Length: 415
Picture 1 (spheres, helix red, strand yellow):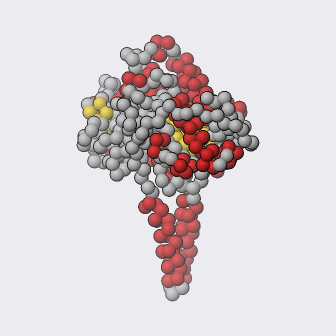
Picture 2 (tube, rainbow, N blue to C red; picture 1 turned 90 degrees about the horizontal axis):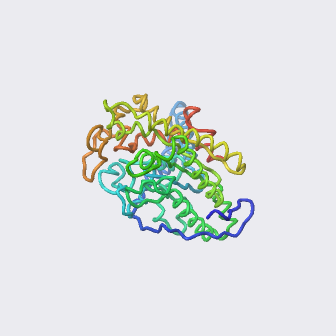
Picture 3 (cartoon, rainbow, N blue to C red; picture 1 turned 180 degrees about the vertical axis):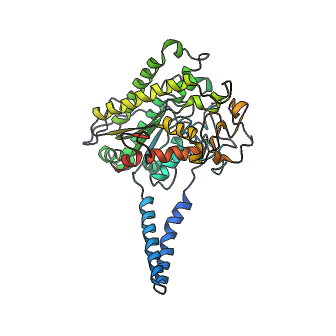
């Protein structure tokens, strides 16, 4: 695939491959009805306040003006900023694509989703980062998993992420079935074919897709379930950390170019987090507190190359915009300064078994901690909803110059 470009400037003939990943998956999509109802109820209250204000002192009228301005601000914030949001990645953003696969990498059981109305396949107690970003972008509903959408539903976007997936094809194979990055891209190509059909032509599809945001967050498993798992994989004997990162970036670039050729123009590339500071990694340290610098160092090599790749892609594709999200730095900030974000526990999972509640990940029916908002980690590897919200908000609106490069997601949406 990737031999035919979906041109934004003029239509071309598309020849798209059939997807090889047509697994039926159950997913519960949570509606944001609360926020929607709030949006429509506020103006009614404010109009009543204005009417009542004519019978009151001038200071009451001033408060009415303030309330009206707040209502207008709420209306602006609720506007959907981009037509669609496409998501590629691993278990950090998977929302159910692995539910129907023969795989150990599944989270469709309680207590996963305990704060989300029940398990959906998300590897957290609640929302993932992309769920929060979807809210910030103004979407009324969360972006659905790939095998749950049909018809015009695809026009708001699709989540292709698959737990245990990696940039390399073999990554995560010891866990069973998963959809690699290249497989996710092939599934997107099938979606493009459907978009062309729904919108009535390639030119219409190209004009539509160029306005969407494409989020890619992948690479963690290439370290966790490949390079640093020598029992199952030979990559650490074949490559130095520098060489391995180069190989990953080369493969990563190939897939991004394939997405570009099928209409993608706005890319948000999420770096790999500090895997060496996860409860699982800490459980193997002598004091249960010291991060694994060997893993973190390799992760930083990859992230530095990914950031450099953003510059190259922006130079090579002047009609597109690529941006890098520094998930590693944001995560380290939460771990180093937990009280700033309301966290008290950074070195253990809320749900898990063994040292740091991280030797064995959260089991079916296990009782999790009660104060989940105080934990950075939900299980041995994945963040809580509270931590995901911090990462998402700083990705959307950078609070530090290092959070996003060269622009944050809110700026990307405005282009």
